[in-house]
Image (spheres, rainbow, N blue to C red):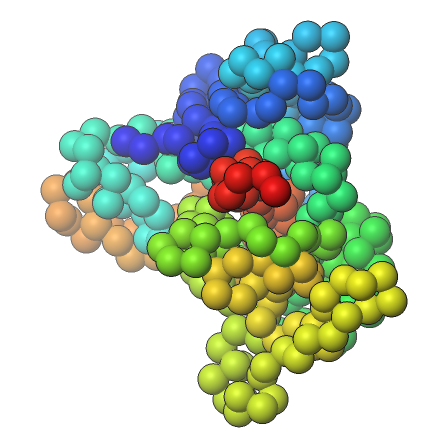
Length: 361
């Protein structure tokens, strides 16, 4: 099982949804970085369950403990071990699933691959694992912040309700002003109403999360296999429930002519090379061009719903299942910090890789 992500800046996550704890080890973090535990905790607070009426009511504090790699508030260059204890796992809620395959879940595929599975909340296939990613990703964010790179993600659409304007006219500092994490408050209210109705109906909703990276320098990413969009795609598509990704104009690019899609260059008053538009989403030839990196992620509806569904059991017999326990009617609000974390992990790795590209002149 592959549990490590990254090349020079790496995380290895461990633990299961209903185990004693989850956590991660961050390896490759340069020494001397200020490690702000309050920031790390604040990112995990944005992801933790039970934070609002439209999220699962599992009551976890998700308190992050630093076990190693930090001395007097700074990274030492040694592995940074982060631990998050599980305290509110209701394993009995999953007893009826011991011999059943839930529609939309990894139960069947996990058992076929490994021959054994933890039916309590999905074990390691649960999105509970992403708390460890957020903790490790927060350290990557601290590294990037020291370089002037800021990462934002927000809910752009829930089901049929979408933000009607582009990211460039939104106040991205107000993302957390709504429980759905949408900075367009009029749309946010409509999104919340949709999610609340789905919850009442015992159903679930999907939608889109938009990512924006500001302060990006030109020159990060590789020109062949490890293109920056490919690396971001690898990290972001590894997030539970993500079904698609698009950069810049994405699939709409196929409907444009080259004369419409090409981003023309100019030099600003500071002598910096910029582009007049950003259809490409901040990369050219797999390498960052200095513009904002823009991407959109498609999230499927939460697989667990409180309605009867047909399925089969481990003896291949037909059964009827109805969801039990505590689940999100829409994963998007809690997915926002996960998207930011995985983006940061990729970019921190790309930053360190960029230092190996050529001799200093």
